[in-house]
View (cartoon, rainbow, N blue to C red):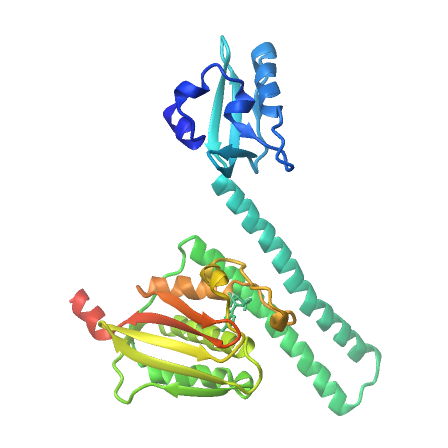
Length: 326
Ligand code: ADP
């Protein structure tokens, strides 16, 4: 047994020699019973020269006291067999992300599409009078926007993952950008009391303006979406340690501390009775984190369940960035 295999299985080489493979690689089925699949595959290879490969998702195994997934490949040698053991964790992550992508997108695609189709069908089949007709066309528009957002989020995620997002940074007036964003969110902001606290004569930040807008739209939309109607959302900006810190504070449903760290990962939505009816992919904060980090900043959340949350991110000062580049 090689050194790598020994560390993967948390078992010293000396303890592995001479023991059945199923003991060394403690492969388990779902009920935790050790199954002899690997052992019998090894026997078949030794006796009959067959090659054996574990399923792509790996085989559940014990490494010390934790569970892991191993990819196992058994090949015949002239005498005996060679067992190649690798960590299947990264492959599983891809498969899990793929499963989540399929289930989230099929649900998030189907819901608005069904609504669009049904409403359009009514409009085509019946002679619907003006006010109702207008209302229904408004619904179609909203659902189409939801579809557009979903597609944009999936594309953004795939571009971030493959490192294809590039920044075009320049000195940006934060106050002006926030005002533009609030304009863009006009229909939603009527649902909340939005306060902006940015000091007069605030220094320029170093940012890609459209991407900064995207970060702000996302955090403000979430603050409104995860709060009861007509509560206050406060956006503040301060200069701290040669960086600008932008915070979006809401008095919404809040997030339990055990859920806070996974929010910035892909497809993470926190089940909460209050949000059962909100739609979303769980990609927004993943994209926000990616964009903030591309700017050289960081993002964090401080939240009290039932009271509200503050999402804050940092951006470089234009002065500092230009100084460093000069
Ligand atoms: P989405 O809103 O599409 O679900 P996000 O990535 O933007 O995806 O957010 C992930 C999850 O984090 C949300 O589903 C929600 O559970 C939680 N969340 C985000 N922002 C807030 C907030 N301001 N207050 C409470 N929960 C939030």
